[in-house]
Image (cartoon, rainbow, N blue to C red; front, side):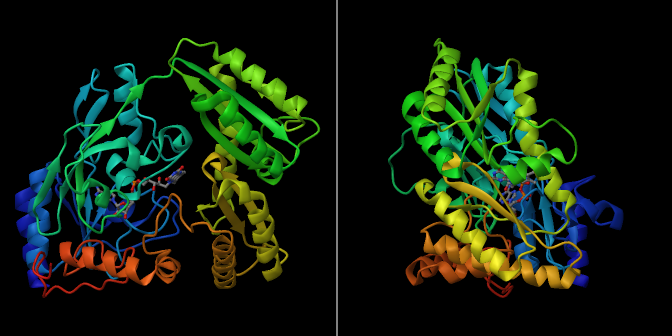
Length: 483
Ligand SMILES: Cc1cc2nc3c(=O)[nH]c(=O)nc-3n(C[C@H](O)[C@H](O)[C@H](O)COP(=O)(O)OP(=O)(O)OC[C@H]3O[C@@H](n4cnc5c(N)ncnc54)[C@H](O)[C@@H]3O)c2cc1C
């Protein structure tokens, strides 16, 4: 206790005003994640405002044997950034490191600090007529450091790739306080291991990202958004193949919603998109900065797809407001799910061609547990990535619902294995999916992962228990157990 108090006093002095929060009221929003499903008890919250301050925190915590967990916008859904419940972990919030250090319009790149909100990064790029393509529902709250640590995906992956493909360089504070720094914006660099890739998707277990060089693109000046009603999920998949071939890289988003999803979204208000309703819906977005007749290309594609029977009904947005109303439908579905309270969230990915068969098998498996369970599948079907969420039957007591949802997750993941998929394509592992993740790792992959982790952080002081069951071993100072 005395040692912890001494550590916090030292940090208060080192970080200056606002650098350490430890009053009850201050801590609430750092303790609870966006979903409200995960609530921890931070020892205190540290708010560094420079890379040097992050190094100071890491060194002092390693010396005092106090574990820490980096936190961005706390929108992650797997309890990665949520502090443990035992009140032992310090939260390192990057929120005060929120400067755009530079934008280079000729180089199509930007250097942003880890605590920049994603929407602000996008806005800063737009001011220079450039585009940072990462787009997700949480972009008003999540931070670029969190996006990098989770290798976030989102709506535009099929055109621009995951966060991994949008990072040119990183600045990272290692668990021993060393700084790994390469913020060059090189597109090509074949000199040795590409170390930055280690940290992208490492969920705060290998270091704290403090800044990143990001890849920018020309800002799309033409955009067409269409809402389509399709006869079946199989037709949606065939439609996607056709869109990829006929529209090529003009396709920037291809999102699926089912009939049940649209009906749920409309519970909060809004108009039925098509009469009669269709079994499946797609939001397709095509965009470009090139001087091509995008509207003619999309209209031609749609006419052919309708003639082929892949689309029953369609609406092409005539204004930005109408395009936003299509996307609003998708957001309303997520809001509806949040209103249902605790439910199973998943972010699985499968080979695209197997999605219809997988969904049918998963639905049968889930319903066999309890016919009252309700499945909602939606998501980035152009990447083979589905959010397959399950609502418990109404009126079930909390503990019973919890146990049933845990069984649901098992049977869904069994089907994911059977169809050659992955249990997480976006949200990552955190603490929540650690067991199913570890159970699926091959022995060599597990050994290599743990060796890397132990080399960088032998005492497991940084994000202990995330990804792997790595208990804190304060006796081992960072850097000593390597090799
Ligand atoms: C409405 C909604 C929609 C979403 N849609 C998508 C989607 O389409 N695609 C998708 O991929 N995800 C999505 N997510 C999940 C979430 O937004 C992403 O995982 C996001 O990248 C998390 O960023 P964050 O700043 O909130 O990170 P946090 O939740 O704060 O942290 C996430 C993880 O990263 C670590 N971390 C955070 N900052 C750093 C840092 N600077 N250095 C090292 N480690 C760090 C944390 O310790 C934790 O393990 C969605 C979430 C919500 C609530």
